Length: 265
Image (tube, rainbow, N blue to C red):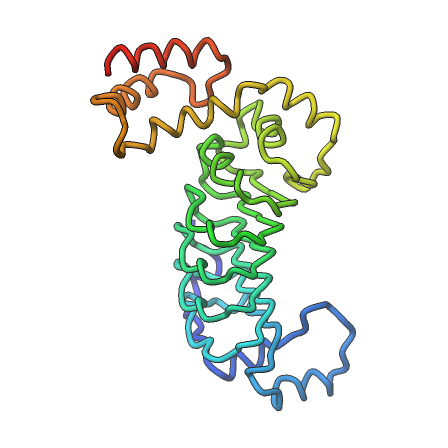
């Protein structure tokens, strides 16, 4: 089904639209006269917040200057690609929810980003966020993410992550989805808009006491094919993993599989 906004002619970002979309970082009561003054007289290099919500934008472009921009809202458009925002080095808050984005890209220079929403897009995999070490809030709910193991493994280095939303993805239908997340992603305060219960965290970590090793083991053979890998071991791993559960549940399973691999090597 087509996005409702796709029925209209796409809007092009130009200076007039930029000025029309100038707003404040924090929602405050601003008089109409003050809003008009902001939109017409402010130097674009001093603008701290822009809201392009519901503007039927297809392509992110013409955001030149804007060196002071801290908050950028591009939600509820028809954007297909994250692009042309690499120069917004002071950006801390970025909303790209409700678009048509398939791949995470073009964010590596935005190292001050703390809040990122990619909610309700077409993303299948978490990637290319590695430099965003200050990230505190990540919303990727209602996408096409199927592999919760990959997502957990990818997000484990994000020490500052406090809020995570992955609800509505195919992976969230796993009965142990929530338990796996709170067991392995330390520091989370909210998961899928729910406050994390410390008691549930303790129980989850006890339940998956060997799961950290299992996940690392899974990825060692799933993605590592470099020097030092026993001859034929990576290929054997790929073949055998297709017949095993995505998430190993016991040390015994790992020992059996490792024995198969070493024997082959």
